[in-house]
Image (cartoon, rainbow, N blue to C red; front, side):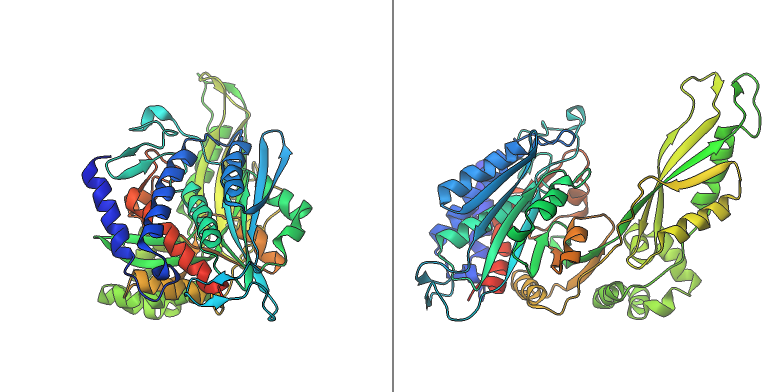
Length: 487
């Protein structure tokens, strides 16, 4: 990274230091610079740790976190539940030695008021696979180039794990007086089977301490034309329902085609499935999101957004939804063709051909009804459609009438004045789904902003995050946590 970029990033952080009414505004400029420098240094170090899943090897990341927590004197515990795979838990307790809060007021360490239920900062340490031959820089280099830090996990979600780490260090060093415990939880295997979270909930649930709130990956702060269009807080997610489609037919030699072969049957079935559009449905949270966004849209679209329950009956709006990926997934269950299989030889017509469908279902949806509808649409007794997994995880979401959402709205409004802070449903699955049934209000909140291009590097090539965001993002998250957990 050139000197000009370093100066620019430092200037960006200094400008953010002027944000008034936030907890971090009371910290010295020297401390703020120190935390921003640590964020960049630790982000590079973290991205250099290869936790590709499979196989994961998350204990490498556990060691990274543990070293820092031990150096900072922050209580922590590690759990290796399988060879090379594990979770890490850390905590800043609500009772601290006498000191000053972030507001500058003296606060005793032992308050007569009962502690509030904790807040959990959740992140996963594993990352998806990457092909270095398609990257501009090696995916585990943590290299700074062109104003970005590059590496697998820079968007999903080592960046947020890093922000949560910085928050814990800031709370400890600044002796912030807390009225609830702040728990840091880094888990393994989110990108595959979720065994890290499942193991922790089953074996160490008491360490969650009946938490009230949880902040995890998700949400979106979309940057367009150098301005944040909206701060989207993920209050719910669709749930995955993977279907296996198998066509059966007469096998034979490839030199003698037959119209009812398994591959031909499969192609016909998939064509019918692709032509099918699931019914439009408006969740209350989606209605709220669209109404909040209406003032920022062109007149015709704004009119639809203000009354989307009626708009879904309008053919023109239906066509708009079908052509807009960012709108389509919010208003219907979706079906994507992702895998195909058949013969192992070009000159052999197989007895079976198959395909996998990635179906995402809105909260409240009926997976069995979706599968049955597809069977009727295909209308072929020689084709079976069955779920790939025996259990279906019911989608859920959290409401917005609580102090955590209020804190996110308040802090975001100070960093991005005039930008709407809106509840959002994400198209992808997050582990919030596993924690809400425990009675925890769980949100996906991202303290970083990103353009569409930057956000699309998640799970893609050239994953990266702007250096200036790494310097600023942890402070935004600190201000949210300090507001909801500080005395």
